[in-house]
Amino acid sequence: MTQGNKQLAILVAIGQPQQADETKEHLDELAFLAETAGITTIKRFVQHLAQPDSRTFVGKGKLEEIKTFVIVEKVRNLIFDDDLTPSQLRNLEREFNTKGDESNVRIYDRSLLILDIFLWRAQTAQARTQVELARNQYLLPRLTRMWTHLERQRGGTGTRGGAGEREIETDRRNIRNQITILKERLKKIEKQQLTQRKSRGTIVRVALVGYTNVGKSTLMNLLSGSGVLAENKLFATVDATVRKVTFGNIPFLLSDTVGFIRKLPHHLIESFKSTLDEVREADLLLHVVDVAHPFHDNQLAVVSDTLQELGAANIVTVLVLNKVDLYLKANPDANLDEMKGYYRQAGYEHVIFVSAATGYNILELKKLIFEEVKKKHLQIFPNFLKDGYVFSPWPEGQ
Image 1 (cartoon, rainbow, N blue to C red):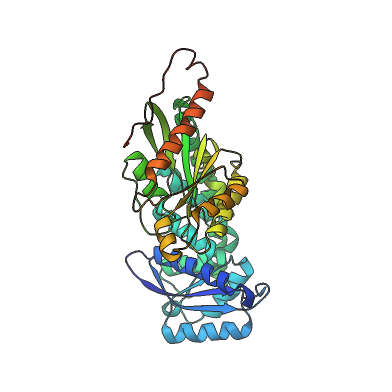
Image 2 (tube, rainbow, N blue to C red; image 1 turned 135 degrees about the vertical axis):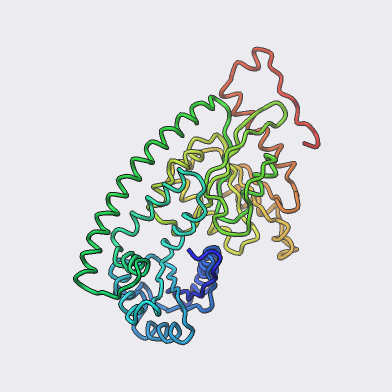
């Protein structure tokens, strides 16, 4: 990570001419990821290929074009929009890092960049352990790159072959040992987390889910009155945040979880499954979507697929279409009722437009949550009505 020290980067992607808009959107997101990591993008290279070159991701001609730009502009970060295979990474290291320490280029693929951001953002012991485990598992087969970084950290003698290969074998053993230690540490933390969740008893649980940077944390603050970090950056929230909230006289737990993103590293999903128990064990999901984003339906699909992978696809869900103020500004003739109908046909029973920034329709969202939580509460405590329990009506102005 380069926080506090802005560095320059080139972004590299492949795509078909007919997918130009989608490729641009992917690179916009990659540039935002880089900016979150403190890296400034100054150039994008896109090559029209059906699939990445097996040797260096891009073809020979494009590679020479990139190398020339790197040398002229003294760029130190090369970021690829897809994951690099170990052999691609090894070949790219040879292509770009042959002139000694001073000219070394740090090569990222999308997963490694995301992992670095998660490592920087993680605050709790659990989140840091999860990210470190995922990062080590991801780097193990790519240890040639790791060795390049370690070599610089050790003073960069520039040795090749012999001593370097022995150091790589030592690093490989060390990283395997570290993975074992992190897995054991995570087991203990997860056991503690399970005990904490059980201690919450039978209180209804509501979880905010959605693509990264769609406004979940801002909504969390509006609904709970808490001070959860809300920034215009990707992955502003990595640790799950849980707050007890009461609407009327019905208490429930509201959790803000890590945002999803396309091509999320597999090891990261695996490591974060314990944290995402807040999602799996929820009684109600608030799926927040940035409706003003030009590709918001693609983002919605990414989140839906991830929820399916987590085993949370059948939980009752409210589709919260956030940033409607920005959407209407860009589309003044939009018919919101028609859009609601479209999403209901797609399987979303509850659809609501809101603006967390302006407060538009937040009261209606609270009322909807209140009614759904009340239903769940009665499922958990079916004798409440028989015992004469009376739910407070929704307090106007709450």
